[in-house]
Image (cartoon, rainbow, N blue to C red; front, side, top):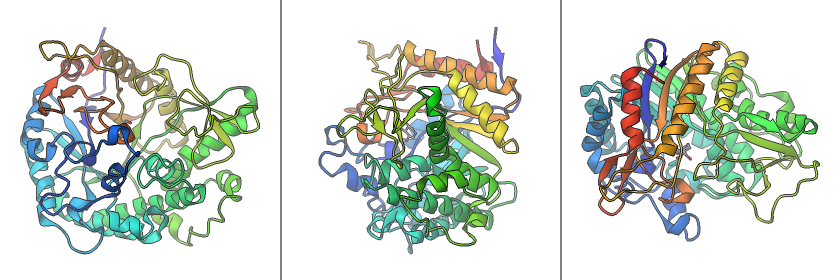
Length: 464
Ligand code: IFM
């Protein structure tokens, strides 16, 4: 029996610039914080960097042909800020814009709808040297950069997303320190949250001033379905939900920060970085909300008797670890089954999350802008990858999206993460999320079983 999706529901895949492009010093691109971070000894697994990655910058035509072969209806990519405005402000690099322009044209020629993300973590290094996301000026520079991209691509890209997962930029980058720029300071992370929110609002406003009124504006949040270990952890759940979800959703969609979350955090910061008028800027009207989902979140309060393992960070899934950004809650290990990231596999949690967002923010349509799984793929002698575990994960999660739609959630699209195996940030090339295998020696692409399976899902407009 096929679980058919509504007419007009879009099937796509997603990628991000630093994870696939390579060509980091070509045609005028300058360093981003991820160039600096990945070249700093000890910051990524085996010292891996995005210098070459999938070499998509040179092979994008081959990659679009692959997308067409898979029958993709849409493709979500990100624009590298350091390719387009190489030092973060001032001079625009025409060659960088031309690359994305050619990519968009080729997608359209192949009947694939482009969705462009403006910021997927590759902040130009000079902006970091001036404080990065702890500095309000970075949000203003983002608004200027958004105008540049809007002018260049707005005539052909129907949907733009401002930020990808500001949770990661703020908390993994400035609190846990496991992502660029590698800062470990909760007060800095909270300043980063606000400046990312502000950048989002300024970006939407800037875009709208240069694109057609039919262009859709969105943001992508990695929202978390937060649960407590026991009934005693209700307040920890409220707190972590506030810190992870509502601190972005409420200002963006309701024009105000959640008071309970600000009250929780006043011992960390006085929030002087929130200026009069910011709430209205952040509340710029949106057309659709992008949600990235991979696994559920389990937490306990810090007075619950758990103790974090020495030096444990958000990346230690088998240990109790601090929830980044706060000293009031811990992340608790969960039972399997797991993906190769150590993330618990639980598809119904995605249905729960979608229904919760639909209940609390009913006016905004939703799209899944990322969902997928890393597994330890085995390449057979003939080069094929029989990734039944990835197919099972995708099948169940696409089914979970269908369940949410059946129960009333307005979900319009599903972007599978990821088209290609790629640079998985601090994990380097050790984790493979692609439905297309990439041989990092030869850069040869081979469609995995999951890619062939996804082609069928798209053709059938649903899963069995
Ligand atoms: O690879 C990342 C992506 O860049 C952002 N969302 C989660 C993915 C898997 O970790």
